[in-house]
Image (cartoon, rainbow, N blue to C red; front, side, top):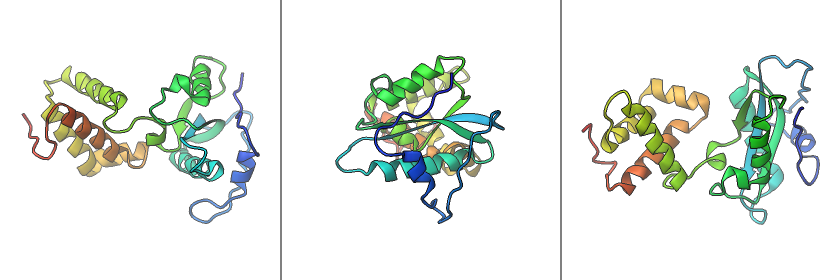
Length: 202
């Protein structure tokens, strides 16, 4: 079973294809071949408010970013986009995200991986319980190799952002990911009364 977009309103994809990308180039429709070359991606995007954001333009720039991320790696074959749900709402309670989660459990879903238009829209705000839980899980995994304190984790977060090799690795997954990871580590440290600005390797 192949999952196709189910978006209310006008033909979002058709409208998006008629707009120039961020470099000013007109897009050409990219038909999905019967046997797509490379990885088959499902795109997920989200906007929180109907009143203060334009759904079409928000979906457009998020799709632009997603296309850039997977350029040369594969094609988008399915799309899921939630409107009116903040990032604090768990995925199972967002209609399109819930459909995506359901699709992931289906062996015949028709795609191999998920690409998001902008990770902070899909995932967690620094300092949120979900982000803090992710940081604690990260520390737990690293602690299986060597003891990792909260201060040491802050130092790792700085390195992930400042070191060109680490930053290139994380930002190669998604532009800005290294900085976001450092921010959620810092926010979790503050929740444990650790000042990120004075943290040392101890």
